[in-house]
Length: 468
Ligand code: NAP
Image (cartoon, rainbow, N blue to C red; front, side, top):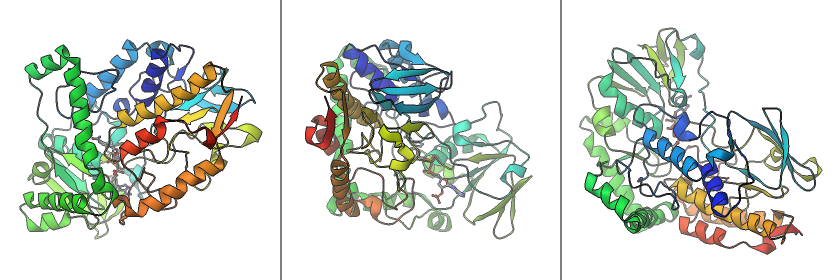
């Protein structure tokens, strides 16, 4: 998604001398990799699109994954980015030569580029649980991002480990269509129900006819989501009201025992808030069993919990999330004097204002560390960051710079502010989640998304070591 964004903005500014390296045969990133049943985006579609590529044809308030994937394929084709993509090619190394980046790829090529932009996404390295005996299971077993569509699950007992955003979507869609659904929950998550109405033909026609109306809807959705940011960022009335509302939703669970087992002991929104139109109905179905006893090991026929009970199943789904801290690694990024990204990030990923790393000239990240991901629209963040990168590329094109990288001082100053602001955020109220970096601090942007736009709206020359 972010690579398409970068490519489209480059093309719009008249630059075609770029290559997008894509490891797979098609574009789409997370929307290509994740095709599990029930996949949808929980950010409203009107706001989960690029401002330069409005889509009047979204079918739902929160459209299904397949539709989002088709949207990104269309944007890539319409903007001419597709022509610049080298498919089925993995970048293995990018090495600074002193004047440019030598990029080595799996097709055996090594080519020089003036800039390297990492647009590798955040959630693309599946995390597999370390559970004894997992490989001994005799039925199909797969990660949610590697869904096996050849299986007919209608007469199957499906066991799923993991109850995050992915697990909730899978349960909600699949439970009514299988014989039995066993959901293994280690820690309960907060879930808010939000209806997902279909857009009428008239609405779609209006969006098609009046682009200004589409732009208006984008900004309204953005405003609504941004109006909730005080709840995430500061203790106070907005957080208290939202917390109260989210807690109340559990009343939809009729059985007090089930409700108790589904009640998290962390603050609502400390982990990514899960939004689902039908989770509360699905989890109360007769063919759904919630297992909250810890998993001891897996046997050929099922999962054994610590109380010694064997939970027999035919199919095992691992909705166990992703390694969110790898970013572009294992690509070997080597800056001047052989300084590697692994060395720079030995104590955990860090980026100047989310987009650049000291020691690596003309290198930028989209969706880098501390980007304001949370429950915000990633297309909007990608666009802000890609426009920032474009600003540097423009300077280079005009001959104003030959290379630029942020200073250590500016990056440390940014992190000093991050550390100061983070304790006030809801993400620091004490919970485990993929938001947390190795130092235990959330790897998020501790201010409103508007501040991210403001920060990246102007290039601060003083924060950079610039070679002319
Ligand atoms: P996740 O939020 O990291 O959840 C992983 C789940 O697996 C958790 O319930 C975790 O339990 C469980 N788990 C992991 N290892 C386990 C083990 N060894 N034993 C038992 N349980 C284990 O991953 P996700 O659901 O794939 O979601 C990741 C992110 O993707 C989301 O936060 C969101 O940003 C994005 N996403 C978005 C949408 C959308 O609609 N926009 C949809 C899906 C995903 P614990 O909670 O105890 O750790």
